[in-house]
Image 1 (cartoon, helix red, strand yellow):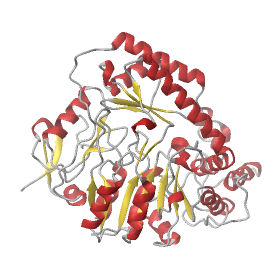
Image 2 (spheres, one colour; image 1 turned 90 degrees about the horizontal axis):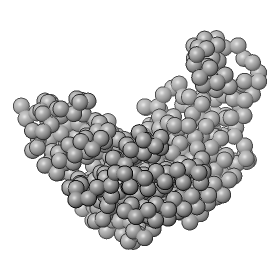
Image 3 (cartoon, one colour; image 1 turned 90 degrees about the vertical axis):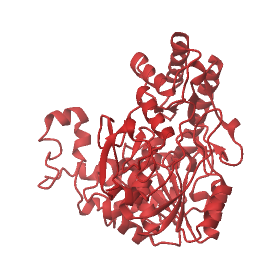
Image 4 (cartoon, helix red, strand yellow; image 1 turned 180 degrees about the horizontal axis):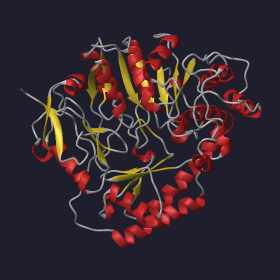
Length: 489
């Protein structure tokens, strides 16, 4: 898994090659999985294809073992490390959720504290619940016009470091779901000067490592670890990810041990080989790939802004503080000026026009532009948005104008999650302490996390989001009639 020169070419995909050889050798399987190369499940094989089923296999000597790689998986990880400018890389088959949790649990232990933006994905807070780590939240800024949460202001991080010198790490989003990037290099430098690890969630930033004219990547500025969703913008299969690191603070072998605490011992070779193939593709063609992606995104942005009413924002919102850079591949569009919430436009696009975008919130929608998109697809999206404005736009409506609710923390996530709890009607829950998550998904950023006071603002947002059609999830009661709160008895 070393990122140093390894005698392998980025034009190779060692795990893919090993699987291809396995298929050619026509091995007779008396091991798991039980479908036996698809012969036992003809309907599934017809659906996914015989080629796919023939390499859905179990760990064996020629194919290595993800829990303790010594051959082709080790080589695939070494190539990934080299491609991402890291000292080590780990193939992850539990999504970037597992990578985020492994990063945090590798540098923090029970009772330690971590400086973390409150607009993190729930996977980071889940790590705190599992491990007993105490969060020191830094509230992101809120954009006055767009209502979206931003990056951490470096000055706010400096204040948190000064007030909490015993914190073990600083956790950073790069970028946010909307494409907002903080001053990554400055925050990483501050963390290191304070003796803290710099951990970066780059779930939406795979392309930063290969494209030109994009914000800096975690490894390029010396961060210790980064979780990278290869499947989001890198082209691998859903649920496949990487954890990359460049650190003297912790040994890679120890990180592997932490990963193995929660990662499956039956790793999917479909997922792992997709990472290997996608890495090869990015390392050899990434610059050209993301040049085309940027070109498509900028064209779409220009066309959407030409409709009027919509605002497809870009680098003009950079302010050097909580928006230090912007990922222009993100097609984020503000919708409130046409009188519709972002989630309403999201629903209309899917239901009436057959267009599935990434997500919509109260004021914005996000379309992911990738190498798989075409000018035809962009034109279809633009024309649909124009027609939605013509047919559905409204005026004078009272629309929620921000999506981030500053938390009021009363207990640590672990304390609240495992405390005695009781259900209360959600409409009567203001003033209680939540013992569970409430979030819109996507993006999976909690409106409420365990240990936080249920304020009127938070409650109002939850009920408004539900009324507008957002998928509100997290509570034990999936109907969202009740919420579990910390019991005072």
